Length: 382
Image (cartoon, rainbow, N blue to C red):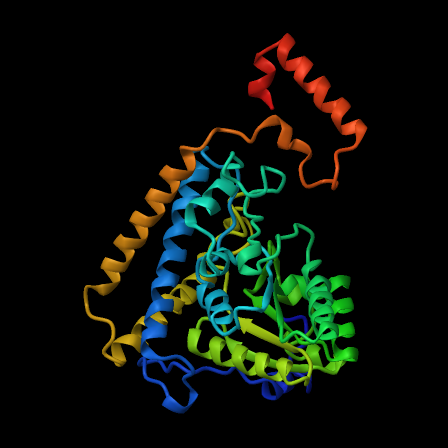
């Protein structure tokens, strides 16, 4: 990651000292038991979730390349940041996602086939094709619809947590966003308001080094993202985003702080986007493999796997078995999702827009029906 600060600047290195990168899993896979906040069974379960997330992302990219879905944006290499945070929350907490938290909505109970239907935009899509692909929502799991604009979810999460506090509910909201989002006005607005009113919210920056093609050092002069918390008067913490145990422990601390009325936390999870921003992006145009390969060696799945082997909870063939299991789950989900009717019913075009359809909408629907009746080929074009 590049920095715009000059060599020899006395401030360089100061903020990394003030906000050290916290880790739990050592290079050999061992860990201090006092720092571990997960049971062995829970850690193994999350390892399997990470494997499923990886298999899902890889398969969905294949479907996009085959023309079976239009777009995909995944979390390859960032699985620990997503699952380590969501696993540390209470069931009543609400989630305000960015683009890469698909494993979190699945963790909260969305059926895998329903998720694939969202990518297809077919009759099984809960959004009825109204949203972009990869913009799922799941109300039963308190997972709010993804917004395409950068960082708009930050003030939304702050507002929801504020409302919960007014009602007296023990609810903490958590929102994810990328490093580029911290240069947006919505991030500033949300963080500032949360700090002033001590809102019970966790602001999770998935610092993966790139805002699409813009490196960290060209979109902020801050040495760390966590130091931005100082300006807002809130708690800041910086953890190894590829260390699931470190992410989980930090999120637990943040939730306890928020629930106790001590205000928000800005949690910077340092990770790396090893693939393109999305299936519409080719990262070879702006970065070399020499930068990417060292991060592949820091793969969060391998990292947790070493810990589980150290705990004697992961045997030699387990990973292959988990991958095969995940691959079969994804295969069945795709098969089930593609079996739905190709498109939502025409009448659903205006559902969820207003409480009751407007006369203008009914008029437009009648016009569409008339056009289809006049030329049946128009039905396939919609």
